[in-house]
Image (spheres, rainbow, N blue to C red):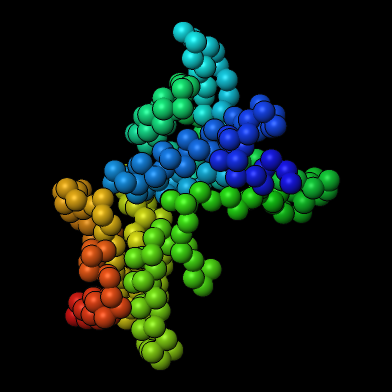
Length: 268
């Protein structure tokens, strides 16, 4: 088994049997995972989702000061995600990562983002001359929030409540005829002006587009942020937005009633 396939927790618990570079990558992975989860819990779902798209992460030693090691944390992204890493996003990510690193008894001075380099074949000249493209590197490494996440139909969900709403929507979809069906897009990134949002569920039905947000236990006290976000989404063409609290998703009947009401308002 290579170190790349070993969970970072195992490497961190047995540092003496792994090279320093593997230990640093494991520490970087832990910082990334905890920081993304913290940002998600604090209402910055769009930034957490962006961190989940990192293709790789690593720590690069800079110096030792007053007995504490200082590192830069490196994050590799595919090109489409790089432009989302604005100065504001960088500062929020750095602050969260510094908070995590402090508990681990080391420090992070900067967060540096880099583009994932493309993979090339020996005949790369021929490919480019004929109008082909070098294949981008994609190791399909996606950090998901939390220790596990539900999956269905090849789609990923942040938590079981999102999956429950999706499951009811899918049943509704299967009941409808082919010429009157609905589309379901979970956790799709959407850029609106200076923001990138990731609605929990984006729904298309009868020529209309709506959004369902599933509010978790850490959602209290964010009504002003929600209203600003919803206003921008409406300005971008989203007709109807509704929210379901996880406390109202405890039974299938409650979710079915919510979905029925949502679709009625969407086309009404």
